[in-house]
Length: 224
Image 1 (cartoon, helix red, strand yellow):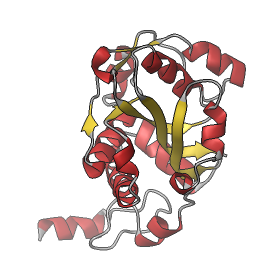
Image 2 (cartoon, one colour):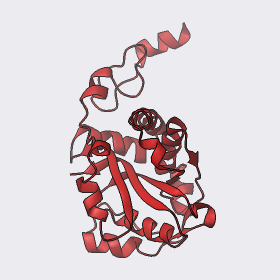
Image 3 (tube, helix red, strand yellow):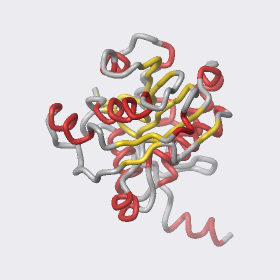
Image 4 (cartoon, helix red, strand yellow):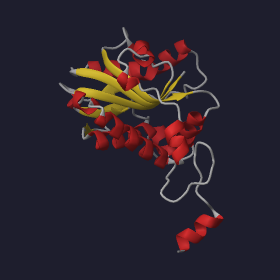
């Protein structure tokens, strides 16, 4: 009763549209859940995400959940998840996406889910790795092994948001190290947002040095 009373004074709102959530809704309202712009890249083998990585790393598959546009609702979700401490966004959307991928038969293509790591200094400051939150939820729904320590970020670089494509690549090149737990595994690499693909490229190069069977990539959103 007390919780219901508080919800009247301080109602939970949808992180995409700010409408008040009704009973049974969590993080997003039902309307936004069904109308946010999905990519459906997991049904399109030769999509634009994969094309960003082709020729740079031995990429098998690449897909993302939503289309990210500047000022759009997906950007609001990502920023709340990444910078405002709203971990539930990654947990809820990771669960939904994982179930969707599992039902599509995608889960059978992988042995191990690995998140893009944060440097220890940034992890301490932020309190959690948003890619790990998302990856853990995906792995659980896809019924795949999860390892948060398979990759390590050895150098702390500045935010990539406002950098040019070349500077992004230069900043992330050769700053990730993979452990041998990925050897002979079909790895699904997970991050929150894809922009140029430079982070995936750098992580993919580190993974390939440990004799992985294959590398695939996924993200919550991809910049258009």
